[in-house]
Amino acid sequence: MKNFITALVMLMLVTSASATPANAQLFTAELHPQHWCLAQNIYYESRGSNLADMAAVANVVMNRTKDRRYPDTICGVVHQGKKNADGSMKRNACQFSWYCDGKSDEPKQGDAWYKAQLIAWQMIETGKYRGLTEGATHYHATYVSPKWAGELQLVGRIGEHIFYRWE
Image (tube, rainbow, N blue to C red; front, side, top):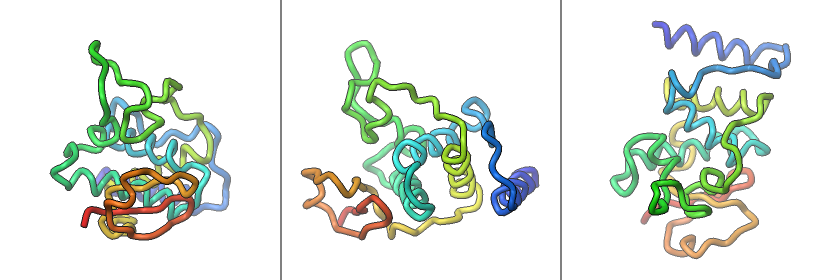
């Protein structure tokens, strides 16, 4: 019941006419690590894009948790990558480049972070937006052409990303 009430309050906040507070924080990394990981990925991968693109990026993470080729948790998927001998992440060798690019992983407060958190919450708690990418497990920005793209089945384009799935 508590989750339902929290989700309802968040939905009311988003649909209200008032602007999002600059310091809006819906959950914390400590209390909701899976929500936090998904929100971070949405934020860093698609914060400048439209709602559909942001939800599609989240879908890929969720789809990967159900695929035996990937970790079975959201944080496991988001943090997947190669490690150095000391256990630290190898720079630029992660599934999602923002995670091991050497920059801070602390999102800036504001509308984009709030929206990413809301989408993450809705995706995990209510299943909202699930299925949008028709099972896609991969995506890339429209301005790049990764080698792996030709090996997968094209699902389509949403916003600034092109989505694929295993055949």
